[in-house]
Amino acid sequence: MTWETVIGLETHVELATATKIFCGCTTEFGGDPNTHCCPVCTGMPGTLPVLNEAVLEFAVKAGLALNCAVTRCCRFDRKNYFYPDLPKAYQISQLYLPICHDGAVDIRTAAGAKTIRIHELHMEEDAGKLVHDPWIDQTRADYNRCGVPLIEIVTEPDFRSADEVVAYLEKLRSTLQYLGVSDCKMQEGSLRCDVNLSVRPAGAPALGTRTEMKNLNSFKAIARSIQYEARRQIERLEDGKRVVQETRRWDENKDATFAMRSKENAQDYRYFPEPDIPPLELSEAYLDRLKAQQPEMAEARMARYQADYGLPAYDTQMITAQKALADFFERAVALGAPAKQVSNWIMGEVMGQLSARGLEARDMVFSPAALARLIALVQEGKLNRNTAVKVFEAVFEHDEDVDAYVQKHGLEQVSDAGLVGCVAEEVFAANPKSIEDYKAGKEKAFGFLVGQVMRQLKGQADPAVVRRVLRMKLEQN
Amino acid sequence: MKITEEMVDYVSVLSRLKLPAEEKARMTGELERILDYMDVLNALDTAEVEPMSHVFPLKNVLRPDTVEPSFARPTLLQNAPVPDEEAFLVPKTVE
Image (cartoon, rainbow over all chains, first blue to last red; front, side):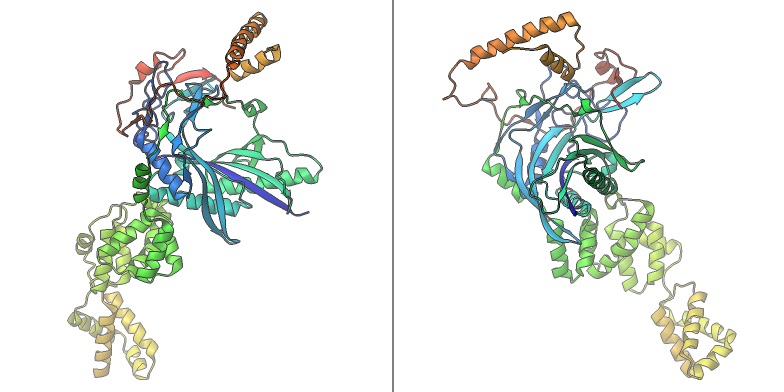
């Protein structure tokens, strides 16, 4: 029998606000335990949470970019559960009237184009971090992350493969980064994913029993856990067993999913409207203002780079995949560097350095101005391409001044025909055989002589000048 | 509404409470009386009344995204039943 995998995603994204959702504590990542906390985010009695206006703005912007409808009259709800990562014993979330709903995201995989429907997008607060201390056999609660604003984006069960899930997440990450509403750093937990997965005979109308997988913090883990869990469910069904609806934990080290204790599956959140946060009523003017602020997204930039600069589709896709690279490209071009050159440098040397150093494009200090200057030096004939690459590698890490570096290391290209001529004489004297070969019509000998002159000049000569001078001298000889 | 001992057990699991047998019996009666009061409220005809989530005529209460100093850690931890110098300590919960 052929089986079909059906997947829906719940993605939690930490918003890049300066402060928490309901208090003025910083959202900065890390920090000593319980140093980014106050009575509001540690759930002390008698405190009053007040919504951060940037959270509302970011959530609406994200919803608009995901083609959602915005709930003009919305409110928060209280989700009750007793677990020490949540000191209030409830999470302020949205159940009945989420801020955005019914969106759509277009994705593209090897299997073709497809639209993933967004069920809803809602605002909520993050929980704290629990670390068990085996020495004292107690759990230590750190509430620095408690109250950091999240949006949860819930899709319809529209995915049929791990490829589609990864394509969607890449699109989502790029969109949120372009909007500037989240940095989406998976390793810091600012983008986290729960996967709901079921299998059914291909073509069957009804959905199978699903399991939910949590603890997925990399695209690789997501893809592998989907493959594992689909296979596990199919094997059960083919053995005549049934799939149990449960929450499963992905174990990266064992490459398998495990059922979580059944108590943790007991879900009875007793939601009710959050009395501490008054309802929200969003005006048409407010929504219009946010719509006007929506930036140009990756797809629009791709199209523009192709139309305005004649760049190939592949190049524009690579450059716009990360907003930081696209911004870098635009700044270098604005400084007068030819777009095709900038694109070649980004796709080659810049991406090479980033991956060699394990750096994210947005953390790169190397400046567009430095790249524009390097390109200009090559164009003016002052640096040859190979030397320029060496200069680039040297200044990349600290964005040192390109001109100062070139001067300090005496790398400027020799285009002085007189000097090249002198060196050529020395090379001729040392290689009489090559001159005979050249005269006998062996073009290879010419290449050898050019190479020798370049070597004498430590690779800093303008190859065009060397060729011209050598031809001239050989003809006279 | 009739409250059974099983219902009390379920609620105490959700709220992480360990109830001794005699308290369970007491809770059964108390919860029943609380829910009986709901019956009094339910007897009112509210067909024509629009549901309301908030009592005060307030909306759009927002604050600017400006960082304010957090509390000193010792001040926060002084309310914890069991702290160490950095964190709130709770019974083992992590698997």
